[in-house]
Length: 139
Image (cartoon, rainbow, N blue to C red; front, side):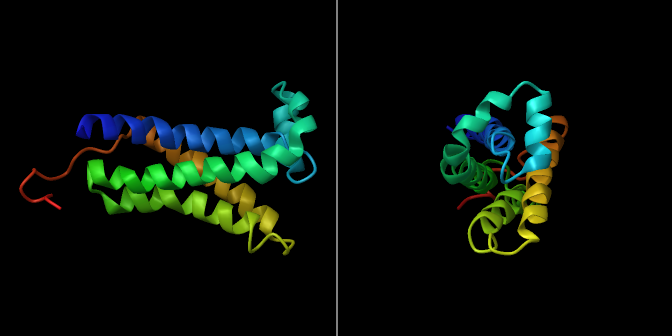
């Protein structure tokens, strides 16, 4: 069971980060810099579903990444890794909802997306390991 949880959290947080990035690439009106990168990659056709991406998919993938990074703590017990993995989704959700009215929220959104991708790449090359034995990690 612990192995399944570790596999789900390792794959899921990367899927959440990638999903949030692709969702942002589909919203040219809200995120023109990322949307131009998406158009250069051949994702320009996504602009017809801008409303779905910004209102549904981007928050959904941010919540997925947030939840799976929080669950990741159960498998590796490293709070600093989980906290770093949760910073990007938290700031992304804050920039989409309470901070959306401010002009600087776009910079927070770009930074949060970049942070999510960087942490996901770091987690690929330096995966978390279980740091304690079963007796000292008992809940």
